[in-house]
Amino acid sequence: MLFDHSRHEPLTKNLWDRSIVQQEILSIIDDIKTSLLPDCCWPTHQLDAESYSNTGAKWSSYAGAAGTIHALQILSRYGYKVINLSYSLESVYQSFLKKPDVSVEPGLQIGELGILMPAILMQPNDEELSRRVIRCMESTIELPLFEITSGQTGMMHAALALYRKTGRNNWKDLYIKGAKSLIDNWTLDQDTGEWLWQSQVFGPKRHYYGACHGIVGNANILLQGEDLLPAGYTEMIMERTISTLQLSVKQYDNLANWTLCTKPNIDKLLVQWCHGAAGIITAMARTPRVDTHYSRQLDQLLEDTAELVWQAGPLVKGSNICHGTAGNGYAFLYLYRRTSNTLWLDRARKFAIHALEQCQTARLHYGQGRYTLWTGDAGLAIFLHHCMYPESAAIPGLDLF
Image 1 (cartoon, rainbow, N blue to C red):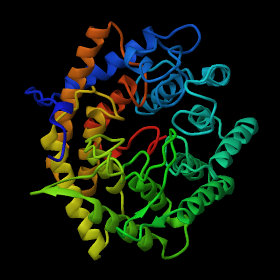
Image 2 (cartoon, rainbow, N blue to C red; image 1 turned 90 degrees about the vertical axis):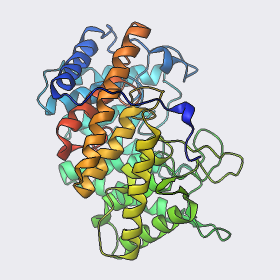
Image 3 (cartoon, rainbow, N blue to C red; image 1 turned 30 degrees about the vertical axis):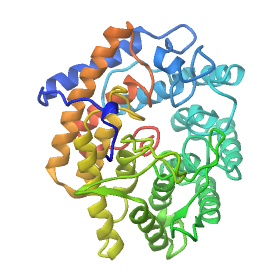
């Protein structure tokens, strides 16, 4: 078994309908507007409250106000009429410092950096914001994390985005410092031949494979900034990563998946963005296509992995990006962009219809929307837009700022 059937549900029989998708995006935007609370946040969803010891207001990029405001900025760029809340980010930041979602930390998804990013993207010349962002970025470099949520990898996504936007060398330098930290701590397991990072995120020390905490997430950001790294690094990164994926893959027929991490007593085979098959695709589908043995191996692995995502079906956890149907749908969009094979676009759109139905059902069940970027409706709205305009498809808050 390459996936847990209990974590998935049958795909809706309803077909792709662009007008329904457009209407759902507008419905989500309207719900976000009408549900805004006076303190510049939104009602915390029951499912997000269960994930934190602090059940009060949420502020972070992952499941709080900053992520929702960032999503609205992205939707505004795409031409949607949204409420402009960029002015409230300073209030959100101060609220986070007083009562953080988890703890006051510098990282991208659950820390300061994720709140500061949508602010500095709107005001790239603000010196005070720049100082705050630089402090957060520098604070991640020596952490024993090596992943997206709180560590160097998430910081590097932000630094690279700011460098591409502004051309300023301070952001380039921070990206390079993060890259050096990753490369210096990338180790070879002499027993298995795998190249891995040991991440200490959330306490335990583990060697993960997936997009959020593992090897492919780190390889992704290294390859995105390959033009900033020394000559020869691209080939080294690809060889280490793809050989490790080949050594660790679990395969059956034309299907492929990976366990959560290397620990033998943790053998979960998840099919999500954060862990497992879907995130393997979104992280690796942007790898340069070159005529090499490793690149050809990767292309076959991605096809087999995407077939696994399709056969597993939508996730029962809901419509979200991190561990829901939208995140798995992004795997098809990324592979479509890599291959131009419309099969993957068709499958992404089928997942989109299912995801919007999940969102509608959940809104009725809980009596409210889920006003977050990574775990809820704000991220779903962007995914739905990308299914209409796949040429711009990129995961918001990571590959898209």
